[in-house]
Image (cartoon, rainbow, N blue to C red; front, side):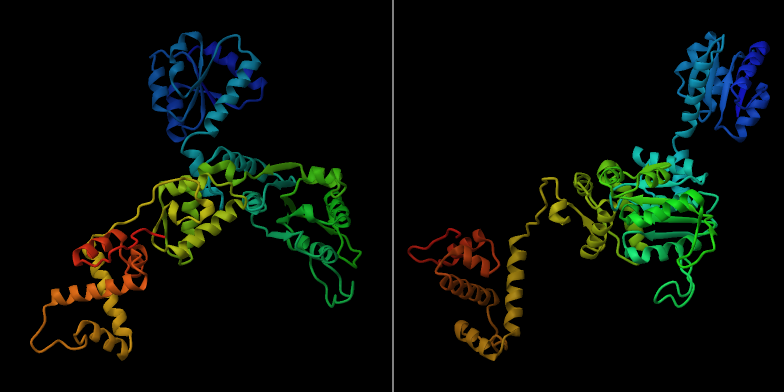
Length: 484
């Protein structure tokens, strides 16, 4: 509905006549009436002309969700307001009027906040705010209100069935069933029976009458997934159903009315298949009444943060642990080609949830093929005292797990029984120093004084071991201190 507010009554009447001529629903209102209307619903279009009190700017500023068209050159200074879509002057021309009305429709359709709010609440499973996804949602909204055949195109994993389900949910058939069938997953000899059903005794093994998918979908929607894999003989029979809206069960002669909405989908290039004689051209044009292309994930990388959030939420609802992603990890994922599209992303998120529960995922935690950023990864460096204490603790633990012969060997080397504290006590500092000297000496001798190898077996840094060798004067006249 358009509202005309112009205190130049004759101009308002002339504009009303023009709008009536182009079949635009409109109403000439007073300023008081308009304020009452805008208080209830600001998402409308106002054709604003002369006002005695000159309150134009106040009205425009107070209603940012309203699209305004100004009447007359005297109001031209107000064009700087964002919600002023254009200016109309007499004589009112059909071309400029229709163009301005179209622009007002776009202002309302793309209104910030309102559109995203509607999409998130009305569409099921369709995540993303990119221009590509907004276009898909727009096409779904437009075709859902009709019974037109829809052909959903796109790569595997882009969510073609999600598109089909949303068309069904938003249609007048939403109370009816949604029946999907994968045409490529059923053997050719069984596909006709799956689609149209069969009568008892129609073929060997048909021990009872069985309804097909078309019959199960009566009053609702049938989704023919991977229609490009349908054999040519079945394409002929499907074409007949599309043309006559009736079918017969296998082995039957009674026609059944096909009161169903048909949505087909494929990842194949049907036009190329037509040229190769593998898909019927007449069936293609019957199905392709309203095509919808589902974008590949690589084409809408800006939707990745929203998709990650949604996928993590779904896993949490299933009882899985939550994870988080660093900004660098998200940027790296945006650079991936995603040949498996959203399905591949879902698999990755589930795998990372299993591997790193309750953790933050950085580039280093991503599988190698998803690391597209060369970033410095934090590697912790621990105080030497902590490392030495840990090494000694591990050594004592390993010794405690060894048999008695190991204890005897250790006692023979250190001159002290590890199991019992001597009655007169001991110098713990000297004891640990002697123990350290003994173990370092063994490691050096075992690896022919190659310091790097001895450091590895002792779980020490090479430089730390060299310092200890100097401290305890553990060296031979010539030894190799270079790593191999």
